[in-house]
Image 1 (spheres, rainbow, N blue to C red):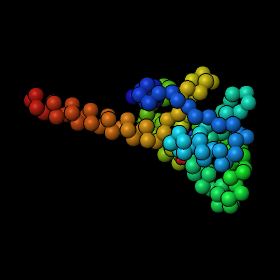
Image 2 (cartoon, helix red, strand yellow; image 1 turned 30 degrees about the horizontal axis):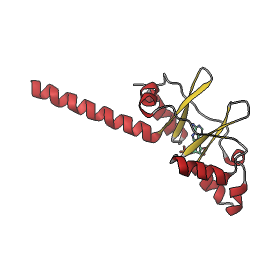
Image 3 (cartoon, rainbow, N blue to C red; image 1 turned 90 degrees about the vertical axis):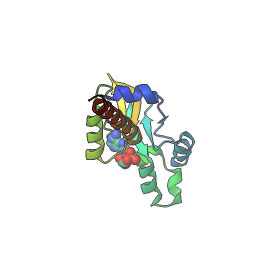
Length: 142
Ligand code: AMP
């Protein structure tokens, strides 16, 4: 199974933010969309970074004035991405090694989606249920 299967189920909705957005507005965006991270897109349409709730928690350690900082001040600039063809197992590996829970999906330079650890867990649980049903059917047929 690959990332394409997950995107086909969850859709290709992408929440993006400008590097100039304030942290306060980024919090509102994450809360209103009920997501844990937003991809930061620069003026040329390229991925400039990713900002997750974890970055915001770290920013807030400095004090409430961090709410007025810009997203660019607290985002991670070097973003690990995958493609639609990447296997789900390989995305799990990227997340485990990188200790992050979001991976943007980029096909031939175009951002086509984002996969979260929640999507991966949901997919894996469905796979396990399918395997269980197949084993039960096999045993019953024997
Ligand atoms: P997360 O677990 O996704 O909330 O992110 C934990 C940390 O990793 C935060 O500092 C994020 O900015 C960063 N991060 C999240 N996703 C990625 C990614 N795909 N590539 C690089 N860093 C990331």
